[in-house]
Length: 586
Image 1 (cartoon, rainbow, N blue to C red):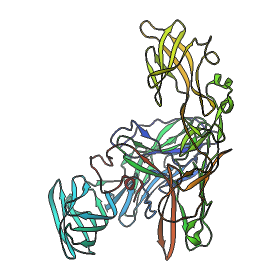
Image 2: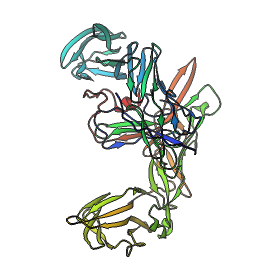
Image 3: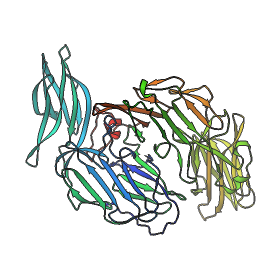
């Protein structure tokens, strides 16, 4: 597996921040990928960074035990430069298991890995309702007899083997791979319930691929090469320098981690998932571990730096969202006011230089931006709600006569005609014209000498709903077109946020000069806590050496209207295991 990456050679002499873009290996191209950003990182000279499942999405992480196996160790000898051998990816092996490039594996022998396809805490199996394991395998309950049950492993509906098991006993099914017998399914028959419809409860069910792959010293994965394979770990190092400059998008670790460097400051971390293949998934942030034996209250603050799905503006280098958790460990709860979500608006100028002359209240010369549920919104002011920013970029657009440009939320921009240096433009909503203008660049426009501006009054505020800079009219013998720049489009659907309104477990206590939500009642440790419509805090307990700890982590739920996922190069479904479990770990 080799990626063809460009190497950029340019010296850096300023402070650099980096976000990491990470994505799951999928065999379908990511045409409609969703970005998941990880922590903001400095990559200036002398920086030593360690990324793992704890602080960076994409690496395998168990949300039931807090276990992670992978780490990426980076050292920058110069600003934006990692010399050969200074990037080390390590996959540690613990109790016969490991993770490699974001997926969990069973280690059959040194360097021979079998992917963990199913990992289930408990599952009820009823006669006639088979346990679909994927890849053609399924587990079938053939019958029960008092405290025992007969289980059969099938592949493509043909029996592979069967076992009669006593209640409470462990079981495994094996297969022969290259002349050696390996376990491909194991678990515990926890309970047998004899009734008209026999049912058994299974625990700790794990299934492994019957198509393992071998990792050998010298194997290459993009810029990396395998340097060590032992019973304790697998190690890869970069075999060539890795260089970065503003605006770069560089693959660092083949198919797993990309670095997206911003235009002015150095940042960016995302985990790309193709909408066509992902049904639902969780995206987590850095965990907080609280020792319940310690009387000292635990606390944590998450920002875009530690929870990559919170809003971050790479161009202006600011984030606005903040999630704070303060605990009453003695009473196993979050006290009143102990869980806080707030977002502080940040003023940004218009990209279009002619829009600087626009002067309507909250949109005078620019507008305020804040994050809400990780998305970018415009903030019109006190008790006016927030407005989603559908489009605001530097990208140019060439639109030909008769063409329509989809602006989102039913809006389109159409060129009706081009005559000489004049362009006849119409803004439509659901195919109905709502505004028309004739622009002659450099001579006449709605604003300045180049700008089309369609404004609309929403909740008593004049909002520049859509504007675009008409740069030039291009005349041709057959086709004429218009060069457009700086498109800016606000949603006309206002998200209302008012004092006293509840979102999940929190209540809005402030709407100006920032939005602030707090819990008005104590929240006891237990199920996932809904913070806003998208943000949750999950938790799980962990016992170590006689002491109890609770691990808290923020996450976002994302759900897409699709049918299945493709976790390997073989098409299979996993109805026995939630996609959340697969993608976040279990």
